[in-house]
Length: 345
Ligand code: MRU
Image (spheres, rainbow, N blue to C red):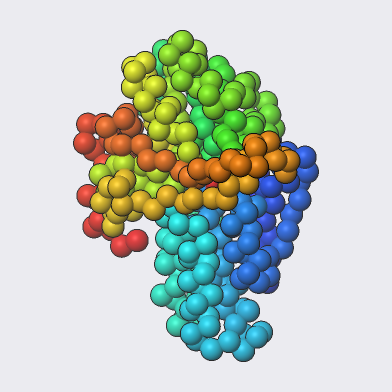
């Protein structure tokens, strides 16, 4: 297996990121030196995935403080810039979490903020590897023989800072020799599955099929997979989970087929201040992402697009939530929310 990819890095004066819009054609790194560059990179999904957004959100506060120093901003301008980063995408709670984690340290100066932001980056791989071990243990205890996994969107190193969450479980199964194959949904409209997950699986030599999102329910009901594993952008206090559009359909199909539907996410994705999925803001994206393909309009000029980036899977459809602290049987009423509400976040 190749060394884990590390798609974000603090250079000392900028955030160096792997531009995910260029994959899999090329490995293009860009250095973000200004708040507006970071916000643009987040908005166009050059930087993406909930845990990665948490990391760049925290580093973004350092970026804003450096820019404030260079351009002689006052405190209000600096706070507005930080707020702009925090709100660049609304659904993945990790972005706001990363900003909020370091923001109280601004009064102590830039180095204190940088140290806290770098700790978030450094901790992410440990968290993901723990998720991988817990998830693999849980699956191996329930699925005899080698496991066939279905996954959706991209939850790998590209969505985090290293290793991955749902893809971390898949990597762990592969390392243990108990993975047979992965079905990776292409993930319309921006193809995070076909472009990014397939690329990461190929890098590691993991056998996989890319399938159209519309094939997933049939793959599940025909018995071609043993388990579905997805990531999460926000987990409400009751366990309802927002993730990439198309996740809900997988959960319904898994329930019908009687196979486990697993959510894998760090505890920073659990938002105890959001009571249920009804309270999660769903990001609506531009119509061109649906009406065009590879920049070419494919739908009639008269057509409009409905383009929610995420959907919400009710807790009752989620067999297990895997975090760095263990596995919670969400469909039996276990959520980490009660315990997390006692922990300073
Ligand atoms: O719009 P994206 O590509 O940022 O959506 C990402 C997802 O939905 C991921 O599944 C989620 O953030 C978990 S990443 C470990």
